Amino acid sequence: VACSYLYIFEPDIRAALLKSTGLAMEDIILVLDEAHNLPRLAGNVAGERLTEFAVDRAIKEAEDFGVKDGKNLLAKLHRFIVLNESDETRLQREPLLKYLESDIETAYKLEDRGDRIKADKLAKGKRPISFIHACATFVIRWMDSSDSECAFFTSKTGKGMPYLEIVSLEPKTITRPPLDSAFLSVHMSGTLTPIEPYCEVIGLSNYAMKSFPSPFRKENIAAFVDPTVSTMGSLRSPEMYNRIARRIESVAARVPGNMLVFFPSYKVLQSVLNEKIKSSKEVFLEKPGMESSENNEMIKRFKTSKNAVLYGVQQGRNSEGQDFPGEQANAVVIVGIPYAVRGPKVNAQIEYYKKAYKGWWGRHTLGDYYAYYLPAYRSLNQSAGRAHRSLSDKAAIIFLDSRVARDRKVQANISPWIKENMKTTENLEKDVEQFYS
Image 1 (cartoon, helix red, strand yellow):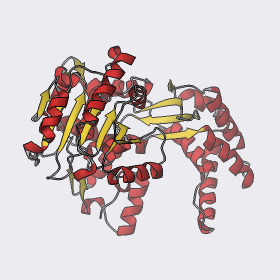
Image 2 (image 1 turned 30 degrees about the vertical axis):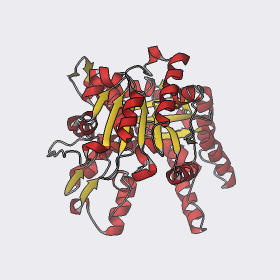
Image 3 (image 1 turned 180 degrees about the vertical axis):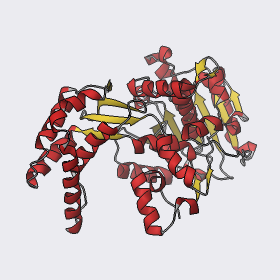
Image 4 (image 1 turned 60 degrees about the vertical axis):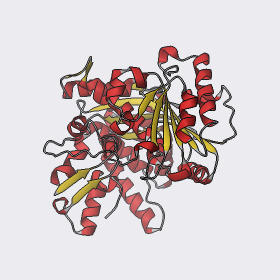
């Protein structure tokens, strides 16, 4: 059976799958492809978000279905979100519970009523959605969540919609139940190295590891590092963005056919594009907030183009979720390193991992390494490998950031198959030309 991770790691979906198949986890050999995504997926499964929009719809749903118990709870919940509207800010768990105190027990009644509304809609052939149910389960989850393993936030969507969020800091609460009970699990990815952090974070203790050499011919791989540019915070300036734009421009003139360019963020992407990259290649631009259907259609058109450039971001749907074999991409340009912004959510994860995993990685704690550095390096490697998807693929990988050559932290975490073919060069144009000649 081939299925999404959610069928195994989301508890309710897993229970339904096992019931429908008549299987137990003990009967299953679990093969996880792209396993490096598992810690992040576990956080998404265990976390929960509630927007002001959802509460508005719940209030209307209560009116439409004549729901009386819980109306005060929904009104208070809406008011709490509005009163605490802010950019990403960490909250304590107790204030919401105290604010809802006299009405909080009605959450269970709302949950039950939401279940009945969903069943009624399903019976009428409608989508079984209930905003009342969503609000009730969120409040119950907020009540039941552990202060030690969860963090609570208020923030806004990209379109400015305020929301409350429960962030799970402990992936093992999601990963261990199926992994511990499965007959066997096989975890595969080109970016699992180093393996120990991955196994610690998801809760694997009894495992065997096997690493395989690159199957690609050396003449089909070239990795170049330009040491004259960087997106390091202290170096970001219009002059640096212009220099990066000119490098992309010169590489594009020397790469036959399609190429990919991935940036550390949409902000840096736009800052470089503002410097007017001149190229004969057709431009395809990944944008923040694109609908999946719109992005899929764009990628379909890019892959059938003969001379195009796709601009996107590392840690994005195209730099990690798409393959570009054959003539679909003949080069990948990686601009910068996708370190996360050290906001409240990232800091909460770092502090949790510092307590959970004692020790040091060079001058940094394991908490910093597991929560901040390693995710960035895995994404860097994932982006770099987008054009090498079959044994016959030939593509150049071009890193436009001096830290790839000079920072020992980065060097130590570059995938071996890339590092073995890496060259630092200030004659980028000449080296790219020679690779394709």
